[in-house]
Length: 153
Image 1 (spheres, helix red, strand yellow):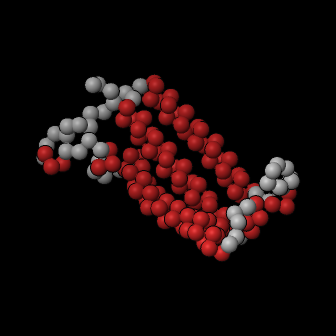
Image 2 (cartoon, rainbow, N blue to C red):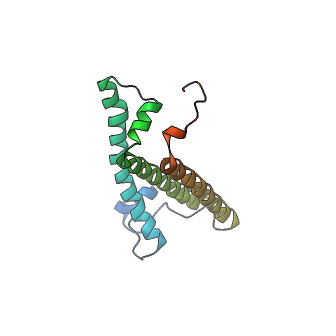
Image 3 (cartoon, rainbow, N blue to C red):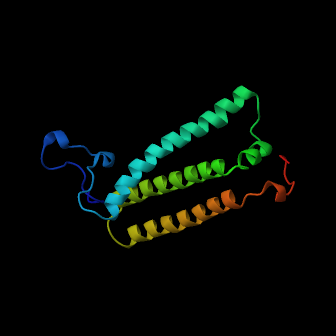
């Protein structure tokens, strides 16, 4: 099979043989790949903390206090800068972490060349658009200007 990089078997110490990309050692030379290696680890750790906090607040504490998650709850929550920053961090870290993982998968399974560059470029463009849209919604959200449209209004 000549697709992508050869990750199995690894030459050298038999105890260090592992086909998993997650088990790859930290890149030794500085550059983009080393930065992305650190980004995956740091963003993953922060995402665990932020996502657990989100689950605790939105799905446990709200239920225990007898409240409902509705438009009024979200508007009161987004009335403070803390929650907007919290949700913005959750959005940015999740999107960047996921896209970096997708970039690694594309790099593993597609040989170097035009298709690989095209897919990674398309992924980056779509990511940039979704990131801008998400940031725009969180930053410019104003509940007073929201029209009363739909079944939940």
